[in-house]
Image (cartoon, helix red, strand yellow):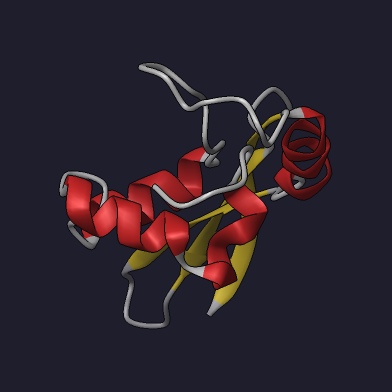
Length: 101
């Protein structure tokens, strides 16, 4: 299988590649830079942990590639599943606020 560059979007950090299979089929691979860790950590550290949650709070920043994976898995459209996913310590990198949802 050969791999060729297809396109890149610097604004979103998304790069796409064509993969040509030996049987004539092809696959488009999508990659996205996941440099949200530093930005989200900075926002999380700047948030006053003693402030009440209130009605509207930004609690996470999720890259499009991760969001679309969550959509495919049915997590993004299920509020309870999304809360569970965001509360999972493995996904802390996407959180912009401490606490439990």
